[in-house]
Image 1: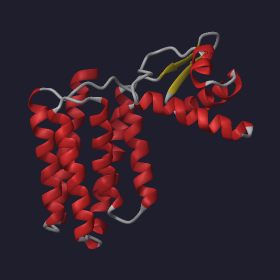
Image 2: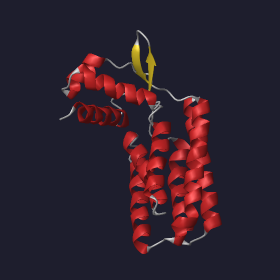
Image 3: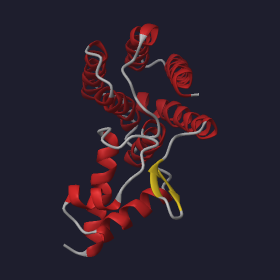
Length: 212
């Protein structure tokens, strides 16, 4: 395997460790520990960490090394705004290109998320929520838009500590997902716009109550 391919592989492995919550926001990363765990030398680890820092997932401090980035309120405000814009902007094309197969797939994703919330799953629930919303954007037929949506979503959720949904939010989030699904199913653009905006903003306020 070439040096570049090995660095790319290590990059993906470290990012997956963040997704799986093996590496958490605020945690300092040790080169030797990561190299040993991944079975590689320090060089591809260094290359991967450098790229993750450039992308904003890690912070680098001279003479101290890398730590997993913790999101600031300013970053969260900007990212939630982009997320809402992307999802709402896709709705017109989604409804224009709607098929029974696309609806069935979205319904399956909705049910998977609902089950994860009921079982109080935290990190897995985050992934299912991402795929529910990315699935909506994918229905537009623009895969580049869906990929960018996932990147924005991950920039929010990989930068703070995720716990199971609590209290009223555990009840409200699945209901809001269903409201979005029904609006799309009924081909009601205005209703879908409103349901998405309501859901994103409610989720934002809930997360803010936990981390800021």
